[in-house]
Image 1 (spheres, one colour):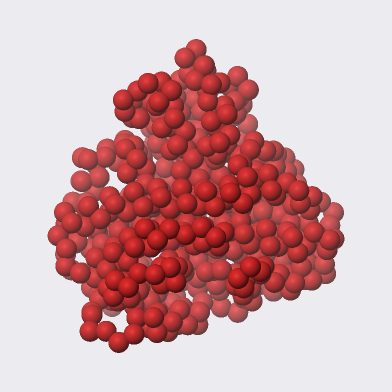
Image 2 (image 1 turned 90 degrees about the vertical axis):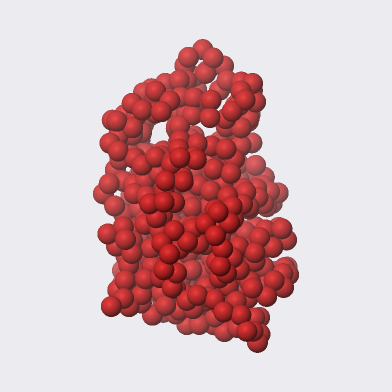
Length: 513
């Protein structure tokens, strides 16, 4: 008998579904509370009473249920109680749990739509923290959530999934405008991976506003601030360069945090997902904020309007901690978002025309624990020297520290930033299409070899499909929530492909297949 059921991430049990406890570390109580919360959000959406307050509540609640975001049952219960208050008395009904829908294809399309919404929710929440909101996106979240509780045909749900891709583009565009409007356009930047001699605070997750608040409060505290995983992108924004105590980047992708956090020695701030079950080696030094949460871990409260979050407890703890242990001592080059790539466009076009660059390969997405993900390192190593890798997200940690060289001064790995900055890669591809005067973006010497893990990657995939990109390789496995019939649609209409071996896929990509 199932104690729970969840198949929303790539590491779900046997690529079928977690039914006793989550592979992510989520227990059945928390999983079932998340199902209750999602059901209540559907009831709230069925009211069709759209407002900014309700829209932000919906996206923040969905964000809370993303893989590795929140393991704290008490906080989920509080969110559920608030959802019931906002819904009020209702005669509407909504299904509880994934398996409540018996039709495999309808269930698959509903969940594909739901996970796209969860990805959108993360990006919209980040933008809202920077003062940018879009009522059209909120209205779509209401409509799409309500649709997952209603009777709709496969064709109707497919149409909503495609619309979800369009809204994912808008969400990433909104967040890009919020980030660049406040912090400036990312620029090519070399980031240190070594350590200093002062105590440090390690910031993980994705939320730039949280990092800003912490940097501002700690600038005279005698401590250094380090980024971890996807927060690496912060170093490329001009506004953060004024903080001399933003020292560098520490460690690698999210799934290495147990070893990274243990050796860091100082406090860790988790601003969003991806948090994993906390180990004793750093349990007394970790804090959460925003939609992240973990039982027994202190949570930093939300900022009041016009104010900053209070990170005093973290800063004071850091002063009593030894400096981080050194893991490596090198440089990572990033900052190749759309503005910086546009500045290089003429140089890139000339390199393509001269034959110096034969192909671009987009290898963005999420990293994960499976040994099979070494495939992405192998692909990066085996791609010919006349190829350029475009990346965003934490999948880059599989290859960004390799010495892959340059082409005419252009690094062979161009890192646009966080997973949401896949938007930048799409924009530059569309610009190259125009510069080469092509009718179809798929005529570019461009291949996609995407790694997925959780729901933000689903939103990015749907966004790419909405922008017209085809022949996308997706791995290391296809999502368990896709039924054979839905996979067939994705293959026939969009050319979605599974990965095989590194050698085979490199050969196919270089042939434009």
